[in-house]
Amino acid sequence: MKIARVHFYVEDATVWRDWFVRRLGFQAVAKRECSSTRTEVVTSGSIVFQLSSPLLPDSPVAVFLQKHPEGVADLAFYVEDIAAVLTRAVSQGAQILQPLQEQPQGEGSLKCATISAWGCLSHTLIEAQEQGGPGAQGTRGEMLDSHLLACSPAQSPVYFTNIDHVVLNVAAGDLERAIAWYENVLGFQPQQDFKIQTERSALRSRVMFHPRSRVQLPINEPVGANSQIQEFLDINRGPGVQHIALQAIDLVQAIACLRPRGVAFLEVPPDYYTQLEKRHRLPLTPSQLQQIAQQQILVDWQEDGATANGETPPLLLQTFTKPIFSQPTFFFELIERRVGSVRGETKLAQGFGEGNFRALFEAIEREQIQRGSLRST
Image (cartoon, rainbow, N blue to C red; front, side):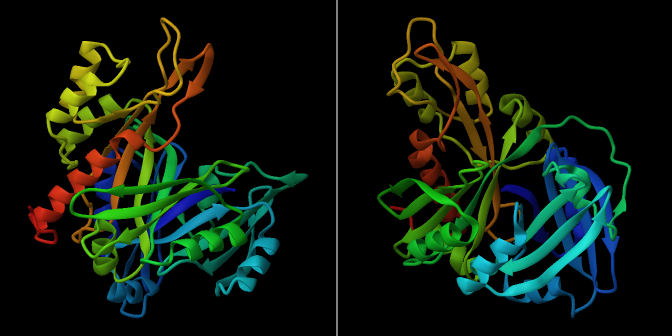
C-alpha cells in the first residue's frame, strides 16, 4: 500500500494552485472543470495534491464546505487487491461512496473505488494493473485520468520528494476504535504510543504503519478541553487530517528559500538551541547548528544507540508551518531524515522527533494563546 494522492476541498482551486506553486515550489500539472467543480493538480517529486473548489451549490465540494472548513477530504491509497479491501471495509461498517470502476490507463487499467473513513475523511482505493501483472504504483501519470487536462509545468527547484506521514485527529475516546478500523480494513499495524502534555494541555497518539510499504499514519485524540487536538475538532466540526509531513531533500536550504516566499512557520525560542547544545554528543558542528537555529528548525536523534568515535547518528530535522487556511486547522510538517552510523551500520533517522514533542506542543500553545483559544498562565 502506498499513498497515491491527497484531495483538498477549498474555496478557490486556482488560488490554492498558485499558492502551492509560488510558496512551496510545487508544479501545476493538470486541471479539470466539470459542471459543478473545478480541480487543479499540483505535484512535487512523488507527491500528488488535487485541489477542488465548487462552481455551483450542488457541487460535492460545496456540500463539504458547508459543514467543514477547507482541508483534506480524501486520502487515496494504491492497494494490491481492491476487491478484498472493499469487502473488509463493508464488513467494518464503511459506506461505498463510489462503486468499483475500471478505466483504461496506458497499456493497462485502473480500478478505483471510494469508501467512507473516519469523520469527514474518505479513502479512494486504486488498483493499477499493467499488461502482464501489477503495475509500478505511485507514478504521477497514473493520477492524471482521462478527465484531467495535462498542463506544461514550469521548471522550478524540487524541495519535497514524498509524503513522510499523515496525521489524523479523532475525538476523545475514539482512538482505539479508529486504530481497530485502520488495522482491520487497510492492514495497518500499531507501532508506537505517545502521551504528550504540558501544564496546560495534553494528547494521546498512536502511530500506525503498513508492514508492506511502511506508510505511517499517526492518530491523535485529545486529553482535556484545552488540548490543541480538541481545538482542531471543534473548528473542523469533527475528526480529520491535522497535518501532512513532506520529506525534504535539504531542509535547511528549503526553509531558507520558502521564508522569502511568504511561508509562515511556528517560532522556536532561542533557549531551545541553548538546551540542544547541552544534549549528549551533539552531532552538529557550530556552523551547522547556527544554520539550523537561523531557520528555526527542530533537531532530534536517538541517544540510546551509543556511537563509536567518528560516527554521526542519524539526524531528524523538522519544522512546522502555521495553519495554511483561514481557520486554524490544517498545517504542514517539513521533515528531513538524514543517514548516519550506529555501531558501524548505516541507518536512516526514524521516529517523529520525540525529543521535540514538548517544544512543538508549546509552540502550538503559543499560537493558541494568540488566538485566544487557550488561557496563558
